[in-house]
Image 1 (spheres, one colour):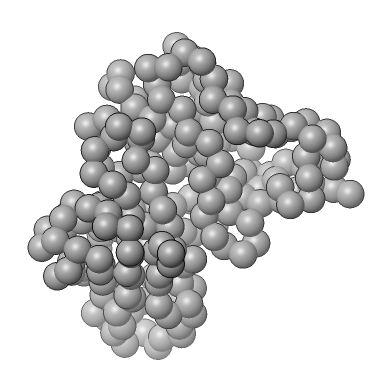
Image 2: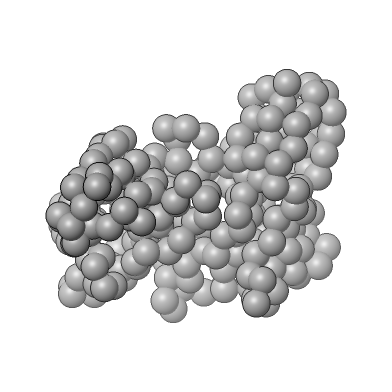
Amino acid sequence: AQTVTQSQPEMSVQEAETVTLSCTYDTSENNYYLFWYKQPPSRQMILVIRQEAYKQQNATENRFSVNFQKAAKSFSLKISDSQLGDTAMYFCAIRLGSARQLTFGSGTQLTVLP
Amino acid sequence: NAGVTQTPKFRVLKTGQSMTLLCAQDMNHEYMYWYRQDPGMGLRLIHYSVGEGTTAKGEVPDGYNVSRLKKQNFLLGLESAAPSQTSVYFCASSRAGTADGSPLHFGNGTRLTVT
């Protein structure tokens, strides 16, 4: 069975600075997809970025980028130029190629300070 | 485009009462899911469905039942609510297959309190 670990329950960053959220996972499969979701105080779950395991190039979406280290089974999220609106709970998740569901980590609460 | 709609948004139940959470999606997705979110535990899968008339158990299915009579709807039932079922419940849907990872699209959640 696959597992996802987010070892930082809470983090904070000053506005306009860069922050990195860590995520490690464990799976014996070679085909899978990784995701970061954001949950602001509104409770809505918003897809931030996705990464296919077979792609070596790290995914980027505007100010959000990932550092995908397949051998280390690490999938960290970097947020550049942090904004107050980035304050949210961030969840890392994995979807195996053979599975129909996502498995989530326990989340990291990020607070952007003015 | 409404996406995934959950009703109700909030509910308070007494121990032993029953209720049904409703989920509807208008994206013609094949797969639908029910997750629960508890502090420090992330989202855990309760049940899911890969098509009309089919359901399967997830990680924490005990105390819940589901039905998918129509492709666009996925219902989550609590037959006899317990305080341990106090949580935020999320419905989600996705396409079949994994061509692009098939990310989940979520509803806005239902906060359920069982007293």
